[in-house]
Amino acid sequence: MSPLGSDGRTSVAVITGDHAYDVPNFHALFRGMASVDAYIQPLEDFVANVGGVAADYDIVLFYNFHQGTPAEGSRECGALTSIVERGQGVLVMHHAVLAYLEWPWWADLVGVQERGFGYDFAQRLDVDVVDRDHPITAGVEPWSMIDETYSMNSCGDDSHALLTTDHELSMDTLAWTRQVGESRVFCLQSGHDNDTWKEPAFQRVVEQGIAWCAAG
Image 1: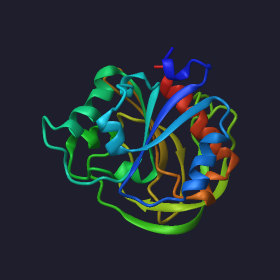
Image 2: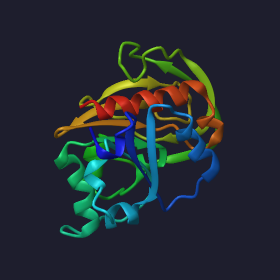
Image 3: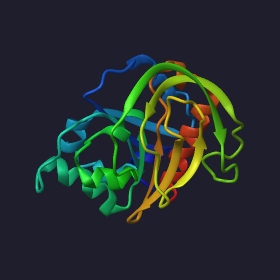
């Protein structure tokens, strides 16, 4: 067990940056998860790795929107690619799916090669659970919520779809899993702001997604 998770909770590095968000309610989202010990931090702090704890997190959750492509051999590139090399779990949430648009490594991580997109705020969409037997969606029933949608390609055949929607302004697949090296990867397009974060079904999917990523 990770030293950071010595109390039995799953330790999660929650990476932010280059995208504004509702800080109190984002923190509240994770504080409401009894099984999660979240360390919310800018990407720059994770890369700096003061204290040498980057490898000790059970999973790394990305909620950042950095663009450009980290230079090969740079500290940023090494910090990110080392996550998968170590086999840590990875959860990529909302706008982080669209981070590093020109970086092939990130496209491989999320399983969407062409990530050109449009977006629409405050859309009411119906969410369907297409695999109710998966640990991430166990006990989750279809629900309706308000969220920002992305009109873009969905994941390919090398990913496993969990949640979908038929909203005309949204990509078809909202949540999917992948195996990248030894790392379990869970991608969740949903999660723009507290209109979504406050939904019990969304909260359950995130908490169960964290547990699944950590169990790999």
